[in-house]
Length: 358
Image (cartoon, rainbow, N blue to C red; front, side, top):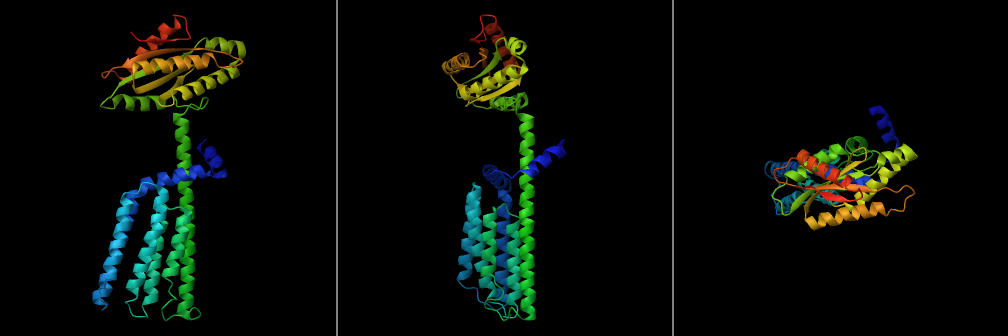
């Protein structure tokens, strides 16, 4: 079964909206790791700068604290960044400043050593970029900036057609190709893993027929709402049942019954959009209404009954609703029992109405 679902997912290209959702999720999960990479990169650059300045005889000029300050500011900004698209742009700026800083430090080395250290710096920055949760555009920009600024043939003593130049060029191409391939494949694997996880979660927590949350989802989210403290206003629980649903199935068949279930679910979704709702099973639905007044609950229940009743469908139905106020000491199961008792009263007092628990 899993293999079948996986094959179906791999056949389809992920929509742009889903890719944006994945990018945001991936960044949120790895934001601390990104910050760690930035801090480690700054520390390594600073150590390299100090070694070249003191052991290599290059003076520690005013440019060093300027670059250190710029890199630190970018790292601080990252600590307050919560949008993936902002991080993608911020990373391009970080790479630009870092490569310029590496170029400045490398300039203090003997000319014969500069190409090797430029390529070492380029490979380090390139690898760091490849493991970050970047978009393709941001990674491509980083790749271009790295080789433009840290070009081992600019300002050094090696020539492209010489032995050292040919080896440097081949290594640069090989490194770029391997890093690019690894980045694309790793990002693709993470994207498909995210899609698979999202699909399996949807199947676990969504009712496949009505496409609204199922009982498992409701018990989780409603319990969380019930336990939230402090409460500014009251919490209510509604149990909703389709009147004479068995008769609909017996008269018109289960296909029509499924259409009715979808229609009722759509009505609940429209009316109760601001609250937690779900199909519990069969023709029963539930809604957890947090931070509402008694009048608001009455208005919503009456509106739902009216919308279902007045729906111009070929197969008209009505609903009955049982309502209860959720006490601070109630568990979710206790509240469900109270709402079910109120639903029983609504059913046996004429249907197509709402009733509050005594």
